[in-house]
Structure formats: C-alpha cells, structure tokens
Image (cartoon, rainbow, N blue to C red; front, side, top):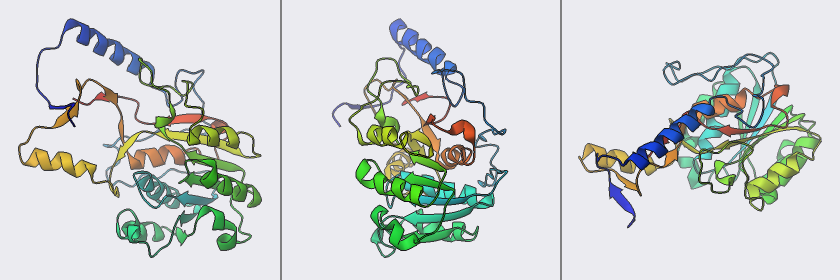
Length: 296
C-alpha cells in the first residue's frame, strides 16, 4: 500500500519515453495468437476472435464442423470460474454436448455468487451441470465417454492428475488445460511469449509437462487478468467506487508497467477454437489480448 500513488499527468523523462517506445514496438511484434516462438500456428479451420464491438449481444458462436462431447471440470471460485461459464456457453451455443462439472458441492455458499447463479443461461443451451471433486469423476460420470476434457480448475498434479486419468479412461482424444500467465520467470523485457522461461517447479509447469506424456492431444492456455459479465471478483468495484466519488485511482510504482485485461468471453472463445482443431495439439498459448496497456 505504501508504494501506491495517485495518478498524475506529469511530463515523462526522455528515458521513460524511450522505454515506452521500445515496449510499444515489442508489443506490436506479438500480434499473432501463437507468437514469435516460431511460425504462427495455422488453424485447421478459419477462426478470428471477435472484438468487443463485434459482439453486440455478448453471444459469440464458434461454429464447429464436428460436434463433440465435452466435459469441463470447473473451479468453484476465483476469476477462472467465469472462463468455464463462458466456455460452456460458447460451446453449447455451437451445438456441442457439454457437461459442466463444478468441483465441490452444489449446496456450497460459493454457489450463491456469479457465475454459478447464472447457470440457467447455460442449461438453456443444453449444458448439463453436475458437482463433484476430481477424484470422484468416475463415481459420478460412470462409464460416460467424452471426446474432449477441459480442466479449468487444477493448479497441480494432485488436482489435475485425476482429471487427466479420467480423460484417458473416458476415451477422450483431446485435453485442454487452463494454466496461468503467472507461470513465467520475471524478465526485464515483458511481455512474455510462450517460449519464455517458466518456473519449472510451479504446479502449472509440472502439469503441462505431464500432459505432454499422455496419449492425448493436449493444449495449454495461460490467461492473465480477466473481466466481464459473470465475474465473482469484487476488485473492479473498488476502482469504480473511487471513480464515481471523484477520488484518485491509486496505482503501484510509476504506473508504466505493462499488463493485459481480457474479457472472459474472448478467453473462452479462444479456447473453444481449439476444440477438434489438430493445429492446437501440443501447443501452449498465452490467452490474452494482442495489445498490452500500462496501469496508467
């Protein structure tokens, strides 16, 4: 808290301006979704992530050539919960047969918050909703078969391992893992690209390495900060509360740090584009916008 300051429009030094120009030039290099670590992935079918303006009714439909049976193992709290909600909504609207498996119990007080209070929206699209922990998937889903399993819950092998094992047993050919952009080692030259060094001992990194050894077409998505309809995070309210009261917005340090805030629907649409897409097999994607912004 002591390092935070109110934003002020003050002239920047030539050094700061040069650094910002270098950052801007670097950001423009990273326009493709699978960025400069090699030749950009060529999708097996055409797909463009729509912008906010292009999504007038907040209902983007990702058309799929083949309808799949998809199991989403979704976290029961935190910002990532909204990614699973939007993914189920996107896939359901595209005609896939989707089961939303929320960890924990349906009677948990966490279910009184969004996006769980909005589940009627996905049920209306034919999405089935169930509750159970990763180690109970077999007992709840029995011998059900799935084409694709998405883990949007686990952060380590203890939680993702049982889901991956169930995916293999359920005959899935594809496994999508929602990881985190926090996996990267700090660097003096942000933003990160997918081939940057990661914290190899982190749970997400261990999971990604393990998934590559399984008889599944794995893909990993690394989101950073997200926002949007259905969010259960109250941190945004703090900023808007200060804005409506005419209070200054506090930011840490200089405020020139680069960051990325993405709508959960856009993240889900990107993940949905990997369903049945062989070009995504074995790939890791930074699941963020193509343009970074400073805290100022």
